[in-house]
Amino acid sequence: MAPTAAGARLPLSLTVFMAVATTMLLAPAEAGLYGDRDALMALRRGLQDPDGALRSWSPELGNMNPCINWSHVTCDRVANRVTEIVIGFVNLSGPLSPELGKLGQLTKLWISYTNIQGTIPEELGNLENLNSMHLHNNSLSGQIPASLGKLKSLKQLHLQQNRLTGPIPSELDGLSDQTSVNLSSNDLCGPIPTDGPFKNMNSSLADNPRLGGNC
Ligand SMILES: *[C@@H]1O[C@H](CO)[C@@H](O)[C@H](O)[C@H]1NC(C)=O
Ligand SMILES: *[C@@H]1O[C@H](CO)[C@@H](O)[C@H](O)[C@H]1NC(C)=O
Ligand SMILES: *[C@@H]1O[C@H](CO)[C@@H](O)[C@H](O)[C@H]1NC(C)=O
Ligand SMILES: *[C@@H]1O[C@H](CO)[C@@H](O)[C@H](O)[C@H]1NC(C)=O
Ligand SMILES: *[C@@H]1O[C@H](CO)[C@@H](O)[C@H](O)[C@H]1NC(C)=O
Image 1: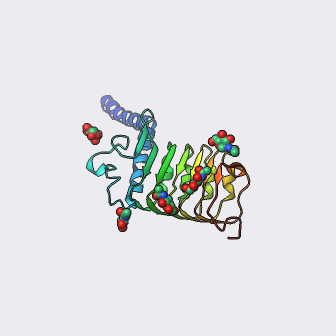
Image 2: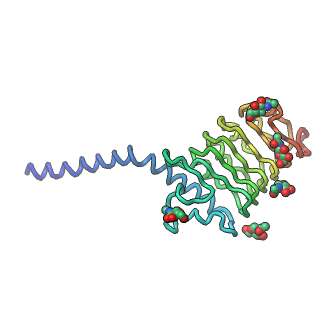
Image 3: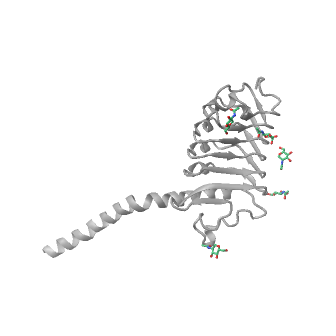
């Protein structure tokens, strides 16, 4: 009887150990990279890409790791996380996926000189490590999300040459006064914040005819 009882106990404790070890040691790192990949795939799924600029983002072809051979993507190879997206001068249309807000280690989000449309997802305010956001020269519309004021690491916010409307959220005056903000050539209106990046010449607001007036 005793050997049977011991035999029943051992696999159970082994199972528990494996489950705990997997949760504690493996899951966080893997969820990070797989989460990054899923966020990139969500972006790609939402876009029309007739020239195949993002065709290397292809887990369905067996290239599962966004840090290996995915174009326009840079990783921190030690942390094994996506840190930069740099896309420019390609014909992409469609919206930015809110899933981009899950790229927790992203420092650089540059998608410029494309035809992306739709609004700037408020989830981008969750990118707490973001250093520069260049979404200029696209066809983005709607309001600038107030959540971008949470981006304490941000040094550059370049949203010029889009179709953004509405007021500049007062929350943006929470950005560092060293942040370079360019909102020129949009259709913004309403009051201009006076603090943070707006109190010096590091913000560019030209070519917004209704800015300073009523919305
Ligand atoms: C860009 O792609 C769209 C389809 O997604 C197409 O209608 C448009 O003509 C393309 N523009 C250029 C300049 O190739
Ligand atoms: C990455 O690209 C290189 C050069 O094209 C190729 O030799 C290698 O097999 C690719 N690796 C993967 C995992 O696709
Ligand atoms: C940037 O966008 C403006 C219009 O919003 C356009 O006139 C200009 O040619 C664009 N620049 C480039 C380099 O595509
Ligand atoms: C603009 O920002 C730079 C750093 O990016 C800083 O050195 C400079 O003093 C700022 N200019 C003004 C007028 O505050
Ligand atoms: C802001 O963007 C506009 C339009 O692209 C450009 O002409 C201007 O030089 C930029 N401002 C700064 C301070 O870089």
